[in-house]
Length: 493
Image (tube, rainbow, N blue to C red; front, side, top):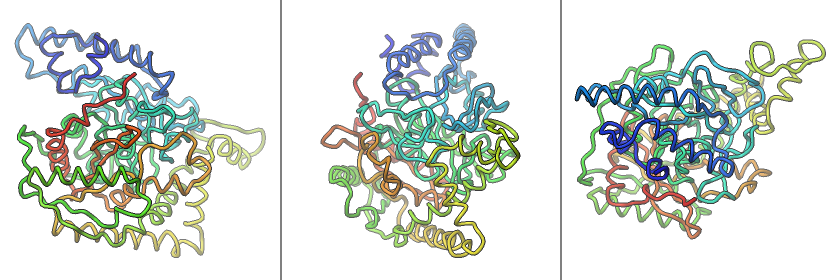
C-alpha cells in the first residue's frame, strides 16, 4: 500500500483522507517508508521531522474522524494531512535552517516563513527540509556543504538546482509537494530535470518573509508538484499580501478552478526566436515544438516573436545577483549567529569564519558582486546591468501586447552528469540561460514535462506570462496535462 499512497496526487490524497480510505498516519508512514528506502541513494533531505509529523498526523486523524461523524467535512482545512517538504533556505520554526552551508552552524529559527505558515495553517504537514545549493548559488545541488542530491531518474545525474532536493523528493514520491525558491530558475530548472510542474510566481506575489535572501530583487518563493492542478492548489494558499514583506504586493488572489475540457481557443502563444539557439539539445527542441503543436491543436494561435535583449540576460544576472548576494551575505560574520571561527582579533574572526564557512561557489559570487559594487566600477557594471535589465523587461512588455504567454524550453539540455560542470562555472551558469529573463523582468513562469530524450530523461517546457497571470499559466499547463500523461510518469525504483 506504501507505493499506492505515495503515488497519489494531492487531490486524491484529500479525497482519500476525507472518506476514510486511509488515515493520515498511514499516509505519513508511507512517505517516511519511501524516504527510508530511497534517501541513501537520492539524498534529497538535510533534516527530517518524523516525530512532529506523526504528532500532527494524529491530530489530523482526530479532526477527520470528527468531521466524518458530523458530516461537516467542508469546514476542514484544505491541505489537512498532506505531507510537504521545504527547501532548507526557508525557515520553519523549530527546524534547523542550514541554507546548504556550514556558516549557519546549528541555527534553529524561531519563526516560520509566511508562505509555509499559510500552508501549515491550511493543514499541511512539513516532514523535512530539503537539500539545496549553498545559499541557492548553483544549478545542480552540488554546491551544498552536505553533499549533492541525485536525480531519481538517473542517479548518475544532477536533479537541477538550486531547489534540487525539493524536486528529487517529489519525483521520488517521498513527498506530495515541496516548496522551493527561484532566483534565476531554481524551481523551474529542477522541475524540468525531474519531470515535475514548477511555478515561479510574479515578483512580490508570494511573500519572501522567511526566505533567506540571495538576490533580493530577484528571489521568488515557488512550489514543485506533480501537476499544474496540485501546484495551483498550493499557490492559491501561499500567495497574497504580507505585512512582514515590504516587497509583497496587494493584489487579489483569484480562486483557480479547472475545466476538464482542454480548450485553448483564442489563446495567443508567442515563440521567441532567441530561445532556440545553436547548441540546444536536439531532443529538447523537438519536444518543445511538439508541445507547441499540441497547444495549437487545442485551439491556441502560435505567434513568432522576438525578445531582442535576451542575449544580455546572462551577464546582467551574473552582475546583479552576485552584487545583491555580496550585501546579503555580509551578515554571516560569526558575530550574531552560526559558525564562529577565531583565535585572534575581530578581523581575523571575520575572515576565518567566512573562509571556513562559505564554499567555493559562494565565495566566487561574493567576490564578483563586491567587485561590481566597488568604487569606480559601480556605474560601469552594476549600474549598467540595471539599465539593460530595464530593456529586458521592456521586451516582455512589448511581447505581451501581441501574445498572452511565451513558450520556450526551460533548459538547453536534459539533466547532466554529476561533476560534469564542476570545474567550469560558465558552463554551469549557461544552464539557466532560458530561465533568468523571467526573474529579471519579474514575470511569472511555469515549467511542466513534455517528453523525454533518447536516454529517457525528462524534458520541460516553460510558459511565461504577464504579471499576476499565474492562473492562466496553470490553466494552460492543466489543459496540456489533460491530453498527455508525461506528468503521470515517474522513475521506477
